[in-house]
Length: 246
Ligand code: C5P
Image: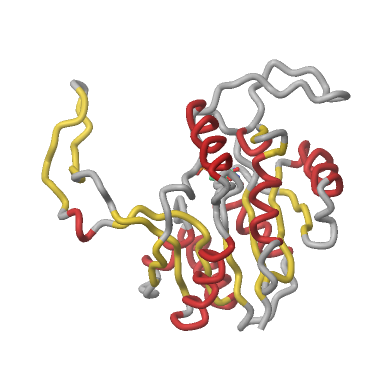
């Protein structure tokens, strides 16, 4: 049994809205840099993410999905940080699901191998949580990292005047889904096939499993493993990195 990792990194990061880093030799562009290429302590976010998985001995190979025009940039970063032996870069798609699907097709994995999918923009994932996810997939066939809800959760109706509360969802029944999300390879291939056949588009892999009636276990994550989404998130990630604990 081998463990493979898929890192979707083909997002546009439209919510981040910060100028591109001044990279020598980079072509001039007024478009904001996708958030996975912004730097934390001088290292691209994507590379922090890849390093966390490369630090786990069980991980055989990492397949990174990138936009076609960013393939060279990602390959250069992978090379610069000595990860050539661990990571392969493939062309992603227009949605996260399509990017993961493209990377999944590029894997030469056996049915009982394990595939972990992890957002490129969650660089603070720690190797222990990755290992716990692998163990949970071995035990349950499917497992994701999640954190309990701290705030009270409201279900709302969106109206022209804004959100109107419908009901309160009991907090103890809520888990906020993070990544990695791990599956036996044959199961992941099946739920992707079924979703694609039905035209279903999910924002994570677990949602594809749920609709197929597949039970998915939850491994306790940490608020540190947050998805870098908005400009202030960079400072928070820098802060966590300074603390020295991922
Ligand atoms: O957009 P969202 O925050 O859900 O992105 C989660 C992850 O999916 C990011 O790492 C992003 O780069 C990736 N993604 C992708 N292909 C897309 C859209 C998002 O690989 N077309």
